[in-house]
Length: 337
Image (tube, rainbow, N blue to C red; front, side, top):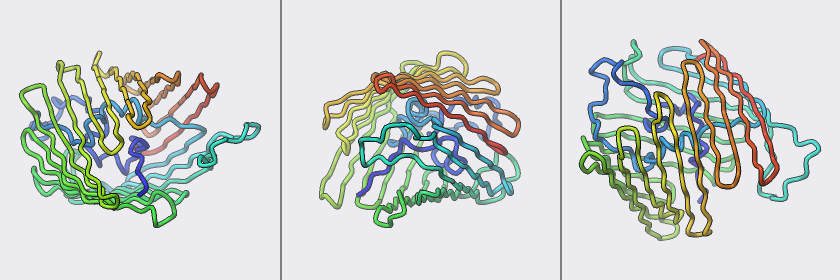
């Protein structure tokens, strides 16, 4: 069974921006919203799979362009949104061939993303009755999802993935989320697995959770655990053990100033005995954003985003001192970005 690399989620892709409410850092002030649209359940915990998304939005999920990327996006109506993007990787001319035969050199690619919001959306505060998203690229990868929120308690998600052009690598997942004032339960049925997890808020600062997963093809059951501790309103500590990967993850985030965040993440794999630490910093301004990361293997990365009225410019740099590798990229997006 092929594995889905969840770390490659593109935060800026409009097809997936609204798929998971925990995908992006939730740093927008709710006081500017009308009372009926503010968070009515402040003690509701995040999903088990989304516990670390606020941290990984900086340490892993940020998009670093290698080469040149051009994107055109726009809404054909209040309900339908399209995005076209072209990616041109840097030239490999004059470089030594990659010794890893499993890692193919990057090739130019085209990606089409679409999103449809069901229902009548007359104001920015109207909630869609359902969400349909899809993304296809020229390498053969296809992703699609439909999200339906029945009420404040039940939410359904149906996702399909083609990791490449081979139908043998297709996966389908059906998720049902059951949410209360201070808990979230999730049931997943997927290709080769089924699982149940729950997250429970205890008191004012602690969130505990666990997941039971069964791999039907291997006839194996695995347990995973999650923990969150709110040190203060601006600091959070996370811990998660992932049974499927036999991996322990510790994370910390700190809101230093308005729109300024410091993140850290530590990973230890019991299978390989290897560990890695990542430090990240994110600063948002009125029309720009800066993200900087460094890991324990001396790999530095930075991404500068400049936001205009109907355009976005992105400059990226990645330096790997151990491999003596330095890569740069820039992107231009036009329309509703």
